[in-house]
Length: 326
Image 1: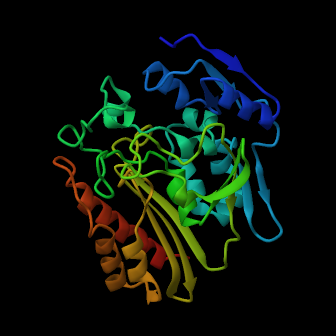
Image 2: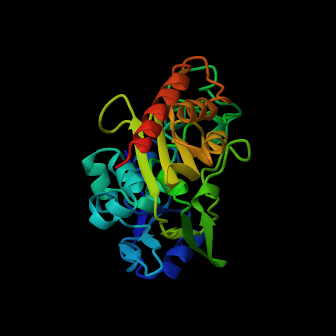
């Protein structure tokens, strides 16, 4: 059963921010995660503040300088199906196509996908876990097959977003509006690791709303992709995933970006793997070393050790495909 709550549909962004600050309210975009959280009593709310009545929060702009702006309320289906975006940012289009099911992509939004709550079954279940204000993480000694192998601390969730790794690989930023004004933030800085605060997912403060996602100009020779391995073809979250964005100078990799999904409590930038590829030809030796570097610091839990070779093998395949591009 859903709790009794109010619903407002402001037509101006300022009104939406005011409602969020003044009420015990939650933001309603596509609602695909919000309604499940309310139903499962992950959190409560007295009122929902819908963004559906505010103009200008969806759609895409392809700017003259080559940059791209995507409204936070843009549906994932619209990202997947947009031909120009597919050509310029194939990794992002592929990531959006891997989210949930067709029904969820038709309703879910890009901003919502960045800000969704963890899918850990303890967090979603009737457990007073650390992330919900309890005193420990039940997954550490418990059923942790799908949990993190990197970046774990007191809470071992994996970040659920497919689009966040792809956007981080593209050096994207989010535009944020709030009671204190407007600012930008790299998507790479948006999410809060549990070592910093296990009760928060993002750095958004009360009343702040993501309005746009901003992708800088795509340089010539940039290759991007997204790969997701999961138990079922639809609905499931990533057992292992990776977003690649590789800038090539001939056959030499100049500016590699490798961001893992299903690996850590936040989208995980594989810095050591990137460093091993920079200024190298993408041959078999470089590919093998990069794949090993990506999981060198892995600390699997009691039941998810299989994730380490899974990530390594996936990265070898994806980097080999990048080497054979065109």
